[in-house]
Length: 394
Image: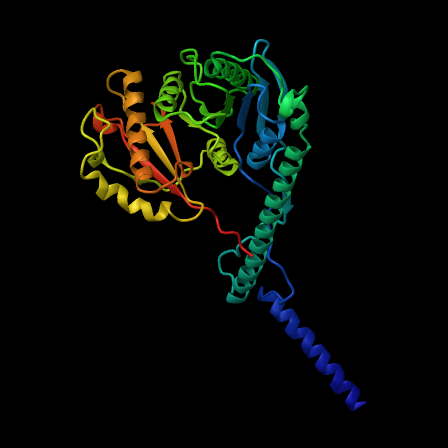
C-alpha cells in the first residue's frame, strides 16, 4: 500500500505542477502560436501586349519560336498578315499567374509574454516563412508551366504559314512600302487591344514587324508608346537602318530597333522580353566626352570611354546593345536622326576593333525615354549595355 500511495502522490504532484504552469501562461512545447487569416500567394506580373505582323515570307515556326521564347502571363497576342488584304491570323491571351493558399502568419505574443512564448513564436514564424517561400516556388513553377503550355498549344505554324508557295512560305504580292504598311496595321491592332483592355498595358507593348523592305512612312503618332522591332530578310546598311528607326521614332515609338538576318533568335527574344516586362539593365553611360555639340563624329577622347567595353564584348555570347537617346530641343526628326547617328558611330567604332556586327544591336529611343530633359545637344546621349549570356546551373 505504501508503494501504491507513494506512486499516486507523484502523479498528483505532477498534475499540480502542470496546473501551476498553465496558470502562469507558459505554453507546452507542443502548443502553437495564434495565426492570422490564410494568405494567397501569387506573382505580381503586369499585363502586356505583343503584336506580330508578318509579310507572308516568314515561316510559321519562326514566329512560333519567338512567341514560345517570350511568353509571359497576362499577355495579349495578336498575329496579323500584312498585304493587299490585311487580316488577323491569330489572337490569344495567356493565363494569369498561378496562386496557392498558405497558412496565416503567426501572431506575435502580447505584452508581458514570457521568453518561452517568444521562442515558440519565432520558431512558428520561421516555419511559416519556409512555407510561404515554398508556396512562392510552387507558384513560379506552376505559372511557368501553364504559360509554356499555352504558348506551345497555339497553332501558330498553321496560322502563319497557311497556303504556302515554294520554300514553305506564303505566296503574297510584294508590298512596296512594307515598313509603313506593317507599322500602321500593328498600330491599329494595339489601339484595339488598348480599347478592350482599358489601357492596362502601359509601356509593355511590343510590335514585331517582319518586313521585306524599309520603305514608307508610318502615320504620325500611330506608334505612340510602342516598342517597335523590325526584322528584315536582308542586311540593311547603317544609313537605311537609321533612317527607318528615325521614321518609327517620329511616329511616336518609344524604342525602335532594326535587325537583319544575322540577328539570332535569342537576341530577338531578349529584346522582346525586355519590352514586355520593362526590365531595366545595368547600363554604362558613355558620357558627353563622345561627341561635340550637334555632331555625330566621335571625339579623340571617346576611346577612353569605349575601349573598356571591348573586353566584355569579346566574351563568347556577349551582346552590345547601343542605345541612342534623344533630347527635347529643336526638331524632333532632326534630334532622332542625331541620336541614331551617334549610336551608329559607336557601333562602327566597336566593329572596327574586332566586335562582330552580329554582336551589336543599335536601338533608338524616342522622346518618351529621355536620359535627361536638358534642352541642349548634351541631352542626346549614347548608352552601351553589355549583356552577357546567363550561365546555366548544373
